[in-house]
Amino acid sequence: MRQELMSLPKGLAEEVARNLVMVANLLDEDPEQAYAYSRIALRLASRVAAVREAAGFASYATGKYSEALAEFRAARRMTGSVELWPVMADCERGMGRPERALAMAGEPEVNKLDKAGQVEMRLVAAGARKDMGQADAAVVTLQSPELASNSVQPWTARLRYAYADALLEVGREAEAREWFAKALEADQGGQTDASDRLAELDGIEFTDALVESDDETAGDAAIEAVEAVEPAEAADVAEVIETAEDVEANEAAFDAEVTEPAAESAEDEKPAESGKADDDKS
Image (cartoon, rainbow, N blue to C red):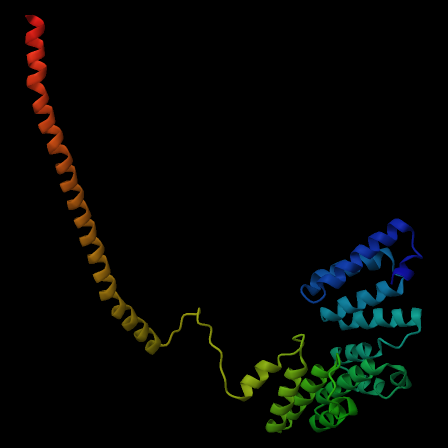
């Protein structure tokens, strides 16, 4: 990408690069914002293949499959690469043309893909089969050496998950559960919701403890719990009040003890002062 941008004037290249970085950073978290940045980059440098590819992925992430396909085709014409072939086929699915996606899965371009690309193409083809109502064929499409392998690759979790989902759709629940578990085992980056699917199959429901329940039984139980706590709290309050009263009484007694000797001392001193005054008069 850097090499492609070197064909642009330096200032323009830097501006385009900044927009492409924003596309990459926002693509997963905020696709709409990523799409907006991609349109800026596209307006600035539409003849750069990397820009067309980035615009394609931003359109794809926001469900604009027709735009995405046009951008991917443009990038492919510029580079001659076939690496975008699977996502181009998936755009055909997104546009409601699964038969075209399936036809692309049989084209010679698939043989030029690397292993990851071929697995991706298999996933797209299986999805197209499901779109066409051919659930059993989708199961067969996903059966491959990559699925049977015990080694974990970047595509392993998604491939196992897709196979489990296909098995579930044809009613093979026990096998589906096994493959969801295998998908979860390989899913180190949280690419799938295999754990949720497993819980669903096992009949486990998760409840948010912070959400109030409308269940009357739960409400009654909560009231009883509060009532059980209140007497103890009342006793604690009474104890605090009693302790405070004791403290006040002790303070009053202490003040009295200190004040009485001081008063007596003052009385003792008065005659002496009076005698001294008489002596002065004398």
